[in-house]
Length: 271
Image 1 (cartoon, rainbow, N blue to C red):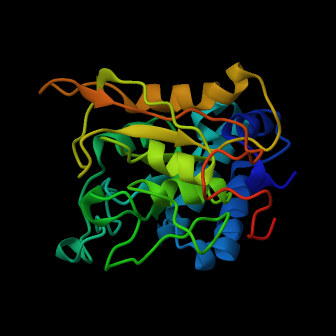
Image 2: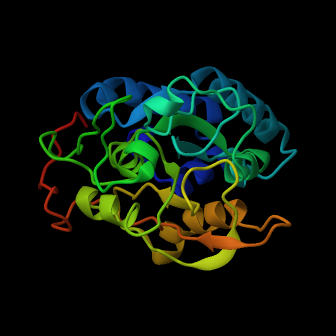
């Protein structure tokens, strides 16, 4: 199985067992992005230099066994509604074209502090305010199963990237249908689990959530949900100003079924 096709839990186990290195995993996803993103336009900003540097540091830690492999094994994409310090964050709007924040959104910082490595920013409609992923700054995202169709919105860049193998995990947002709609269009599953544990500082979306890559092979529910549960728990936690709501997605089977109208029996993308 190609590295980009593996789910986050399998990648973590492979890194723990030293059958894959963090650098190999990051490089495999960048190679996949180079192949498929010109067709789907899910990724709007690459964080290649920082991701490779983070992967090298994680690799050194894994070899020394100085920290848990758990989060050093995770690579994730970030919806462009969340700030990433020093990285263009445009919110799909001409009002923010070229905007570079000076600090991370809280949920992004928590994941990075835990050792997870951000590899790219993903597309969205302007200010996440529509059910299709298209804007006048970074353009339209296409459904990886049928390039003539759309992936839904507003977290359509995340769902398209994950389904196409560009990322094993993703950070997006959901108010009404912004994660669950794209999940249905792409053929992955979103579990909207509302709590009062998340903060939204550094994001244009009112809720923070995680979305995980589905697996190619059928796995037990525990294995399929472990990555997303840990990912979401790390992103949760309230600021002194008070708790906010979080909704997040769980991993599921990547075997294509007739879940949404955009699903076909065979993918149109390579691999």
